Image 1 (cartoon, each protein chain N blue to C red):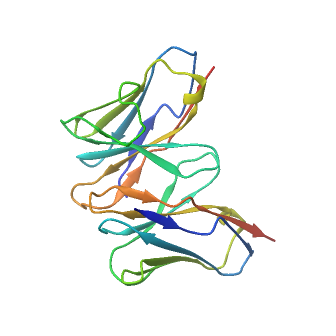
Image 2 (image 1 turned 45 degrees about the vertical axis):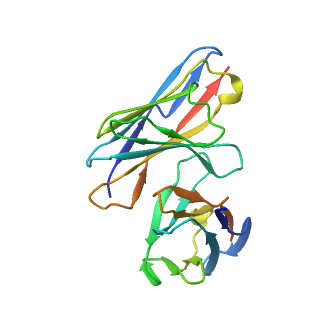
Length: 109
Length: 116
């Protein structure tokens, strides 16, 4: 079956760095997305990886290892507004998104 | 990035009535649109995939007669919740794929439906 695993909740301190991991098993693979979702709102796109390696975009970076079925989202210089849920989603061979349950990130002052 | 507009953002309706939600791609042609539903404290669940000009493909357990999806043009897909009941109250979100980019999906703002 198809499956996405990511931690349910993480806590970090303002100004610090946090890494949110995601492992996936899908029927075929066409890329890995990370989305940010604040409570009551639709998810917003953060990153897309289809090749192995690290993609850096400002304070956020995303890494992919296709051979390991593994990705992580790295958030630097954490701000209070980064408190949100972070969703990992893999695109399968039919171009459908397989979603993880999301990681709730709590930022403390 | 590309823009997907979803309307309305919030709607309250009476039990037994029908509600239509629109999803428009504003600056790109979307041959494929996805409709999701989010239950409280859970991840987004894919309901159906709609391809322009053809019938939608529904996920297992989703009632196609209850959740009518139309994708008649390259920029518009609609989801109609028919004979709504309180248990249909949820957050509905659409996303669309930009055919020129082939893989990236963009999301609408979401619609919070409350059935009273």
